[in-house]
Structure formats: C-alpha cells, structure tokens
Image 1 (cartoon, rainbow, N blue to C red):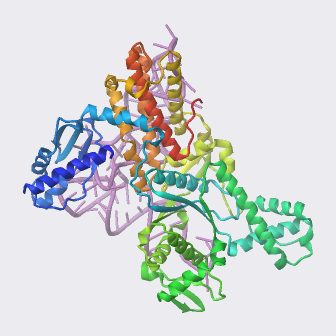
Image 2: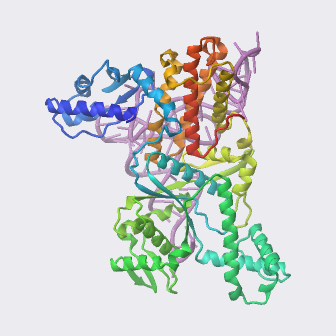
Image 3: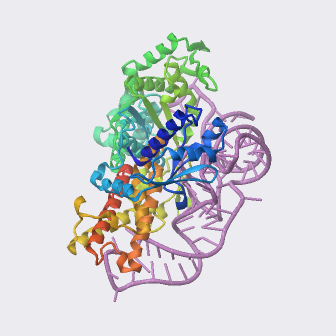
Length: 562
RNA sequence: GCGCCCGUAGCUCAGUUGGAUAGAGCGUCGGACUUCGAAUCCGCAGGUCGCACGUUCGAAUCGUGUCGGGCGUACCA
C-alpha cells in the first residue's frame, strides 16, 4: 500500500465511524480526492471530502471536517497533525519517521520500485505505429512509437498483462498500387518509356526497390505480363519495406510482441465471420449494391460500407475483423494509438465493438498529433505524396534516439508539437533529456568519488537517515516517495508525458540541492562528517534509482558518464 | 455546413482529472567554480489562462455561445 492509499484508508475509516456514530447521515461517500498541495503550509496531503459531503449532509464543510479529523489518530507513526483549512480542506502533516521509513524502503526495492499490482494482471492490448508498409517511417510514426512504447511499459509496471502489437496493412488497394509503382520503376530501369501516374508512390525508395529486383532477378519480368508479374512485385516491395520498418523500430528501441498481418484476417476467414456476425444480428442491409453496417445505431454519423458492389470488402471490414479477433483473444482493454488524422474513425470502430456485444469503452483510442519538423525555426517541407520527407531514421541518426524520444514524451500526445532538429541536437539547457541524464551521471560520479574517499554506499543497517535534516532533503524524500503514485496516475490517464514532468522536477531539486554544497562545504554530499555523508549517499543513490527506473519506462538510457 | 483536437508569459509547453496565491524551460539582462561534473545553480523582468455568459463553497480545468489555428467529413488505408 502506498502513501496515498494509506491516507485514503484512514479517511474512509473515519467516515465509517462518523456514519456509525450518527454524525453523518449518508452511508455512501462521494469519490473524494487526495492531493499534494502546492503550498507547504497546506501539509503533505489534503483531501476535499468535507466539502463534497457538505451539500449531501446540509452542513457546512467547516463543521464536517473537524468531526472527521477527530476519528483519525494523530501524533502516531503516520500522522503528526491534521488541520482544517480554507473552505474545508483537511490537511495531513505526516510524521518524519513515517516518511523516512517509506524512503528507506525505496532503494531496497531497487529497480522494482514504482511497480504495483493495480492492473491485477488484466489482459490489455496496445497497438501503435501500424504504419502501412508502403514507405519508410517518418517522424510522426516516431512520436506514436515513443508514446506507445512508454505507455506499454507503464501499464506493465502497474501490473497489467500487456501485449504490444503492430497491425500491418498488407492487403487492399494500397498494396496493388505499391506493386504497380515498383513495377513501373522496374520497367523504366530497363529503358522502357512507361507512364508513372501521380497516384503512384513517388519516393526514391521505390526506385531502390526496383533496382534490387533488377539486380537479383534480372530482366525476367520484362517478358511476363503485368498481371502475372504484379504479385511478385507487391510482395517483394512489402517484404523489403517491412524489414526496413522493423529495423528502424529496433534501432529506435521499440519492441513488439505481435506483428499482425491484415492478410491473415482474409486467409483465416475472420473477415467473413465478422460480417456474418453483423448480418446475424441484423446490423446490416443491402443498398446500391453494397453491404452496409448500421453504425448509426451506435452513434456514428452515417452507416458504413463493409462490402462493395464488386464483392471486395472495405478496409473497415478488415478492421471490424481485426477487432473481433482482439476481443476473441481475451483482451479486456484494447488501446489504439492513432495519428490525429484518423480521429473521424473512432465512432465507427466503437460502433462495431458495441455491435459485437461489448462495451464501447473496451476500446480506447489515443490520438497523437502531428509533428511539425523544423530546422533552425523554419519548417522542413514534408510531403508523402511527392516523396519528399525526412525519415525517422534520418532524425535518429542526426539527433540520437534518447533526445528524440524524450522530446516526444515531454508533451501531451494530443497537442501539436514543434520538433526543431537543431535544438534537439544541442547538448544544452534547451534539451531536457541531457538535464535529466546529467543528474544521473553526476550522482554516479559522486558515489564513485565517495568510494575513492573510503566511504562506500552504506548498507541499510549502517545508515542513520534522521541526519537528513535539511529542508531540501526532506523535500527530495517526499518527492521520491510520490513516484509510485505518479506512475499510477500515468497508467490511469494514459498519459506517459507526466513521467518527464516528474523527472524534470525531481532532477531540478537535486541539482539545487547539490549546489548547496558549492556554497557551503558542510552541505556537500561527501563531507567531513562520515555518518552524514553516508546518509546523503543513501539519498543520492535513491534519487539515482528513481531516475533510472523512470527513464527505463520511457525507453531512455541512464548513462553513468556523459 | 457538421464533427474532433488545440488556444496559458515574447517563444516552446506543464498545470496532480473541479481546489487554496497559475508554473517550468528557452530567449533578454545581471550574478555564482582553488574542494563531490558549470551539460549546473541563483536573481530580475514577463499573465484579463482567446473572448462572453453559465454551473457552485471554488473554474485555466465542466456546460453553452463566439473568435482563431489544425485535422477530419470515402465504396483510400
């Protein structure tokens, strides 16, 4: 049980007591919050429960709060004192011994600190990137990858059974177009004057693939007809592009448990089954030769075609099947991370989930906004159509994967993001990742220095944490203790960027603390007083552990030297 | 036209899911290393939270309207 949960328990017990004694008439309590106040004077934690009870009880919060307080033991191991303040807040001041005990535990937990079991092993599927295998990944995919991977790590850390998935759109029109594009380039390489329509894939990589085919297979496809050749060109191109995507993601430090092919949905008749299911429930009708799904029954703007008049299922039909498949695999929650341009798709996919008899909320869609790529403040032209774009690989090579990932994760994913290549490259204050990594390296160096001075990291029974009496130290201790709550809130809200916000605050406090020692020698971590040095080393090492754990969740390295 | 997302300091963005006196970084200016890493720290300045109503003990946060930016509105994926 973490600190917040402990306090919640205290409050709930107190409310029960109040209800039993008849002071409160309500037996059901509203969902109150426990937060850490911005101002120190307001204690370590505060709850608004009395204010929420007031209208129900028809009593003023300032009257209810004292009654609740009376039921909570004070001056004990946990709570030092309680106060009623402002409009009716109950402020908790926890005892130092409680903080120190919780604090000491952190470094004993090591790299498991921050994990919990709130997910209760629930099966959860998280799908991200899922870029079509028709071209290399660009910077926007990188953002989706960073967010998805971090979120998956966080959900796993709080006890979910997480499965990471990439959906490969390797069926349909786009594939045919891809094959035709490569085929045309191939013929051009053989000196033929063939047309290259504007809806073909324009990128240079198409020519490279054609060149590979030429060098591996010669001109043998010159003789066969287009319809005979196309399947080969399509599958060669998809394989080649997909391998590139997989390598890019691997080098970006992104891992998937499942690469799910759209083609298998057709091969294994999942598409047919999904449509049969909709038909059976009378959620379809025939009109103008097409088969329509009545998605408006479930809140969509208009009904959607699932099978065209030529008998070919739409992309949406595949997606219905795909989500049916996810449900059948037993996932209780299905998280999709999509580019913001797909937002109009959400109502229809929720509709089909509901049509399959599930709650529409089992699927949660996280929208990731576009990245605005800049160089020195001026936008870099990006157009997939014309094939002029900066690839994710180019950005990683230029900037480094840690800086790219961290930058993506410092912002909410549903907000637009300017990514300036020159700024991201700078190893300076403008670049938050170095700020955090530097703190980690600095602590490693302090520990090393201490060892050289004959003061190794102390054992848990050989350190007196009561010596940590500076306000800055207590501050850090409290902040470190809130780490598990922070992780839980990230998991709950599906907002991994909170980790970087937390890290920035923690590290900032550490750097300031460190500088106390620059001003006065007695405030150095390693100083004349060996016992004090040992307790400060313990503190420093705990900070190091939390930084490292947090960075690990983000998929960012924690270097010991820089 | 309709729908979704976003409007917070000069710039880029946070803001603990409705809490108490709205915060960081960058940029400007000024300061701090003979001792654990200056990739750091400290200080100054900077605000009608786009605007207007509303909801209540309390609003940057929720609702309605409005203005501005982005995206979507397929028998493409």
